[in-house]
Length: 198
Image (tube, rainbow, N blue to C red; front, side, top):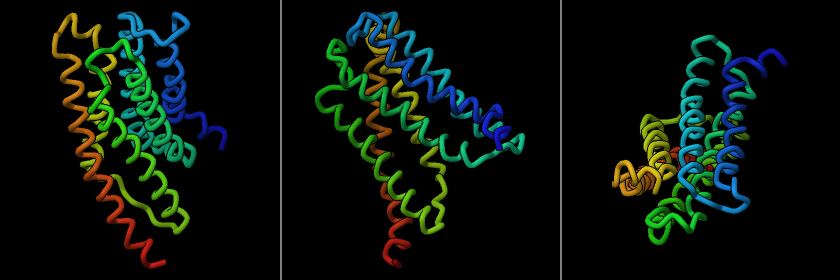
């Protein structure tokens, strides 16, 4: 049991959870929420590495037959913690003009609400011993979401190198939000059948 808990795929998942406070720390290096260029590039580097572990942990667990209950439980939690933290940081960063503010907040709200609702649905269905598989479109949604957040983390620092960095991030965030609405509806449609049967 202990050996499975500390296999490489699970260690990558633990690392992704540890990346969450590290990303936050990048924005608070000066004792307050501060989006300096150094903070943004540091947060982006940590986020990219954490996102890569999201792919690797599942791939290695399946390839090496090292899947475990703790890995299955923590993997989606790690993803949601990372995404939610980054979205909240980007929304709270008032120095970031043109970032997640105004109407763009709706895209972040849609994504966060969907994650909470689907998590609740999965928990309820798990009690009924019903599994809702992850669809291919949901995987694409996650990929688009991660790329959007990466662009937005670079934000003003990235705009100095490539002027459309923030705008690309916002467009991708809205695309992710729209796909999120569809996949969220898809999950609820699949789960509603089991809920109505109760």
